[in-house]
Every structure is written in C-alpha cells, then in structure tokens.
Image 1 (spheres, rainbow, N blue to C red):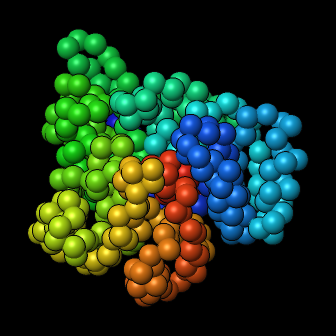
Image 2: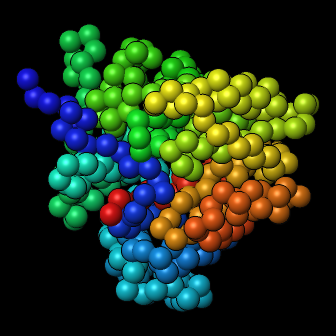
Length: 355
C-alpha cells in the first residue's frame, strides 16, 4: 500500500516559518468592488511593495503589457524591483489564499510539493474556472509537484474542495477550522463528506491530528465561516481570537461560543493553549451591506506582519496587542476600509511558499 503524504514526512508549515516567497494576484475584477475598484490597485500595490522588501513576491498578472503600468504603481511604494517576479495567466479574483496552492514541506529531505484542492468559488460564485487553473500554471512554472487530493464517495473518485482560508495550522499537528464552513449544507463544498472523513483526509494530506472545531464565522463573510477571520495561530501554543464586546451585535454570541471552545481545547501534546483576545472593529457597511471586517485577516511574512486596520477606535489597541505578541517582527498596518468591500483582506489575498 502506498504511504500517505503524512507518512512520507510531509506537513503543512505554520505561517511564521521561513518563507521563500508570497504569491499574489493583481486585481482586475471591477465587479468585486462596485464603485470602489479605483482604490484597490493602490492597496494591493502597497502590500506588494512592502512584502518585496523582505522576500520574493510572485505577482500574477493577465498580460505582459500590464507590467510597465504596475511597476509605475509599485515605484510609489519604493518596492524592491528584483524581488517582484511577474507571472502571466488570467484570473477571476485576487483571493489566492482560497484558490491557490497549499504548500507542504518534507521534514526528512526538505522536498517541497503543494496540494491542489479543487476550487469552486466557495460553492457560491460561477466565475471561478480561471482561478482553478492557476495551480497547474504555478506547478509548471516552478517545477513544484502538485497533488490533487481526492476521495471516494458512492463509488466515485472526486477531487476535494477546500480553501486555504478555511484552515489554520500551528505546524506541529494542530488545526483550526469551523463547522459552519466545512459541515454546513449552506454553500456545501463536498456533499457526502462528514466530520470524521474530513479529519481523516486532513490528517493524511496536511499531517495534522489535533482538530479544533469552532462553530461559526463572523457575519458578512460570504465564504460562510472561514476561520482566518476569527481565530489564528501565531505560535505553536498561542492563538489570537476575535471577540465582540457589544452584546447587541450578532457576532457577540458567535465569537463568545468560539472563545469557550478555544479555552477548553488542548494542543497536540495535551496542554492548554494561550488564548489572546482581540477586539472586533465596529461593523462596516458599504452600500447597506455588512462586510467581514476583522483584524484576524493579517498575514505573517518573514520579517513583518501585515495588519488590516479600518480607521476604527480599536485600531490602536489592536496594534499594541500585535506588537506585544510579535516581538521579532515589525507590525505594518494596511488600511483595508476599501479592500474589505471585496469580502476579503490581506490574508485572503496572499499565499506563502515555504523556504
């Protein structure tokens, strides 16, 4: 019998481990930010420029002719030119955390591969097929082998649907995920797959064995419960988690229930986690629609942490929390008041490739 990836020594590294590069998609889809798209390239450019000063950025663009215009935009942020590599392939959206590769490292021989989970537009949108082809392009251009995770259901072999934003790992065997995203009938990714099957699959492919199932994600999240908006590992034993103090907010009970689960959870060796509470920003409505604004959608790069802020009274408090807990990294804030209109922020639009 063939050994599973976990048995071969592969695992999904934690985000704070050494990274070779970050993959980002340049924004083109104006329909994702109705009325506000003109602000989005500048925000993405700011993020690319900042990250390029610490590591390589693999930037996916549609056509070669875009390079000159994008470089002009990046110059405003004093980007490191040699660290930005352009890759030409069509895309649907910028949210590569969900549609892109999930990289694995072999603990024995340091070999690198990536998982090519099927992407289906969060079981909600129909225009996703360009994004679902990007991983094949990445594999061909980097020569990194891709693996298509599959499962047998009712005598049929099917590719598993899974988004990177629906999971968060500590690199040691523990994983955060939500029942709302993976087990709900709403926006159901994999009809027929139950909780135990998910655990067996993730154990086999990601080398995780300790599952912390939270209940629901925040209101306004059109992915239906992604964990990277609510709770995140920042070390093998420390979890940052969003909390809402306003008892009238629909997020109050949701996040309080998740907090209780985390407080009762243990890590892969049976020890309690260090849980750090992070306040939510006030609800943000754009054109009468609530958007999933959360400080939890941060991204950890090699020397910095990119933290979304929202011109909110809690911004400064959260910055202080992050500075206390990331003493070896610089906290760089990015105003995401406009970006969040696309129902995603910094973590959603980045995908790290381990070193």
